[in-house]
Length: 252
Image (cartoon, rainbow, N blue to C red; front, side, top):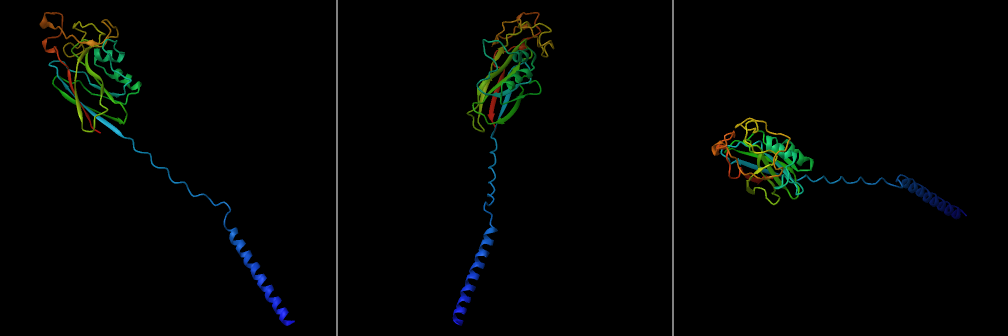
């Protein structure tokens, strides 16, 4: 009988120990949450830095006696144009070609979505050279328009429009000779009071359009030297060649 009681006691102790162990396991599992917090999301990749392109336009005044009004340079796409031969001048082009003020000409490009623009701060004298730089976020199909007035005229301007510079590599250049155009907005009277340059110091811009009202290649001036006694211009103001040499270089 003693052996049976001892055996029963040992079995009882074994069962008790087993139950205690199970309770301990349950308590440990209770410390682990059923839905653990998710791992934090990785930080987003940084935005790539925008690519910038830049151009330098070097302008040389090729005339003998024609100061050029502050030169405007505009970078734009293929939908925009500074002027079209045979078509009327825009209001901005008229203001530039009659008075040398390029602000409205440039603003029209900016309003239409040009990439960038720059203007010289002062006129460029005969034989003078200056460089203008502009840079902007990289775009496809970049074209340049450059324009200025020959200030000892009624409404002559010089420039190029829609020059494709999109294929230039950094350090590469191209050159253009800029023809001379007649804005067709003011009669080429050469009379005192009608020319804004130093040859006269006259009015400059007049909103009334009194000429053919379309852009054409300029026929040149007459001047007193050719017997036009009422002209305020002389032979030094003549031109029969492009007014500007342009050198355009990709800088970045």
